[in-house]
Image 1 (cartoon, rainbow, N blue to C red):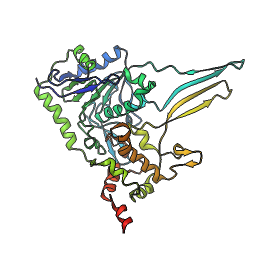
Image 2: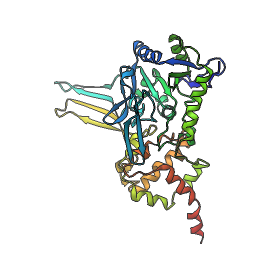
Image 3: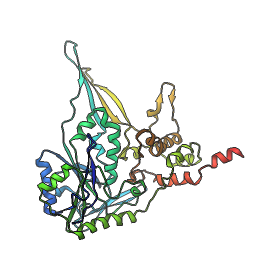
Image 4: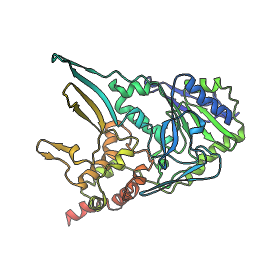
Length: 393
């Protein structure tokens, strides 16, 4: 039977598992898929998956298939998001929701240390215990799987609460068949098909799911489900679904020499144009699955007996984030937008040997004024070198 090339990586050991040749794609009927979710819960995992809440598809704790967004699709565009009913029984006929697994692995607010004082004035100080939770994420798209691997490079070596949450996590990916209008993952090499970072990768078909093991954990789960091998027709249908998604993407980005492009255009006039529209609202950084800026915030109770220190999300679009003793080093919207985009597509590569953008397009969808990063970089590329030429004339 045909096999689909699959590869996953353990977040801690770095060991790779290859499903090529030795592991054929499996097939999960609707009943076996329901059993997969139940099995994860039975094994003590907190099941996190997409669900509809407040007019959006978001990740949350779910109890099974009944909580997934059945028969729902998204409408996305610059500064535009909505969902509508499709009338079918598809569970994953949408691109991605408003948030990503980042919200669970790297929470917006994470209490780290505490201090208490008793009636005799004696102080007790200490760290909060590391979280004891084994997540199982269901429905993770390839862009978000790549984003998790990016954040792994930032946080895993620190022995932090991120590591505690990440080590026991199981990732059930889903290959995209219908990209959003703001997606450009194909340009970034991060989708629409899951290629790494998953335990199991699913492709939703009319009659069920093809299932590709990406790790030994995933292979064992499929074995426990007694999942049969997928037929040749089912394998080709799976590949065809993501091929159609890639061909249907409405946005693309030329990444040729993009690192140097960003560095050599620090004074490009396009920064002034985008700054005139940018609200510095931080939406793009809040929805981005790779942004990792944070701050430590101390708080003290009104009676003065308890205090805590929390790690909270921060944004390079906030003026206070760049504030130093003498003032802000990036006081203008122009400087803050330039910092963000240059970090994503240039200095991030210097730091982590990978781009900070996975092409999910959330920053485009959730920007109130519809700023499109693909358009901005295209405009910079179109005027590349003009500033230097003008300086010589």
